[in-house]
Image (cartoon, rainbow, N blue to C red; front, side, top):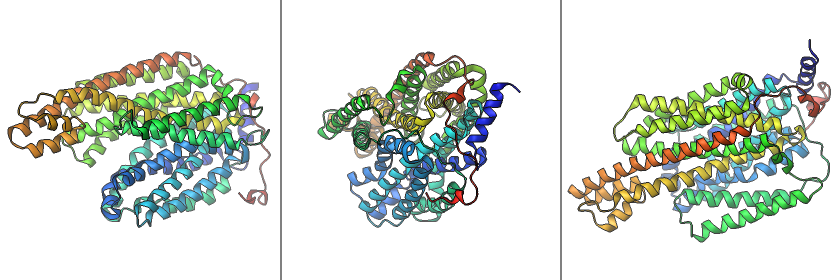
Length: 535
């Protein structure tokens, strides 16, 4: 046996002390599945929540948005805290909080309580998400095995995003809306003791005090930026004070956070990681991939329902092939990474996704199921290939004692890319859509202006007008939306090709030799008494 192989085997034995690493992976995937499902499960329950709790417009917006907003804001805080106090400890506390918040949300009798419960779910999600990746980095020190583990992990994330609406729809058919939260509790009751028993504890070097002020600056800064981006994505004016102020304050705090970290002897986040081309490039690729994906998914759902007239369930089923293709790419990712290397793999993923997006520009006012199926399958496979290669490269480039911070940076990039994608592609869509509604015969200018806000609003205005003018406005709005869809797809293709160029900075080959140099030596397997140490 070669020296490298022997070293890899020793690292595997050290990392898996007290637990089989593949069992650990199952526990981590269940954690991720729960968080991913909860991010989307509420979408189908919004009408039932609105009917029961009767929230105001702003309250309803916060019910939907507060979970991802809080989660994205606190990822760096809890990711770096896990590096200091123990990643397993933070993960298990996240489990407990997630379960308590789920019960509070299920039993909420007014909008304010539900908003608070959703915010607490976001805190729990922020504790769970970076911990899963950082523990995975620890228990799979061998890069080949870690690539396979990340592939399974990312496939589970794709499943969770797709299962959320389907699970929510099933529960709403048989129970009340609170059941979409109540289902989390038995999973948490199982995950907490199993995770405490099986997951190994790990932390960074622990040098210097934890930068509490820096952590709060990062949290508030990210909250402001994400809030501002979400308001832009929701169609708010760029000049609105409630949009500009969070962006300016959040951006200023993040700049101050970066300057503070550069001055500190023991920074909260080692910004030197960004000096590594593979790390910074991988983060940029994650942002671009999510920017394209989320905006396209939002517009695709509108196209399927408002242009083709499909029901919400039929719309969800049309998007299922995209999810299965993403799962396949995740499971095949480790083999592709070994064979082609990060550079070619991520570049191929971007190019395949861009091709799929251009292919979908052939969609029109009539349903072309075969074209849509082909485009969605290629889109799902290409995007997951990109995200897999980028996440694996980012995590492998990060020092083991900074695994929590690196995972938090990756997850924050994911959330920011999603928010920016909705804002940017939504703006492009509106700019291409609105001009098509001016000068429709028989339609007053005020009606055309109102119809230019969205296709759904155009249909409402057309119904109010009635007669030939209403029919003309409806047809014009549908044609304008399809035109806007094509323009948005082409802009997305350009961004994806930009990502392919960016990916050329990634390493050509998957470097596995000498990886143990930076590995943290873990203690020998604990006995039964030691394994019962309190969290």
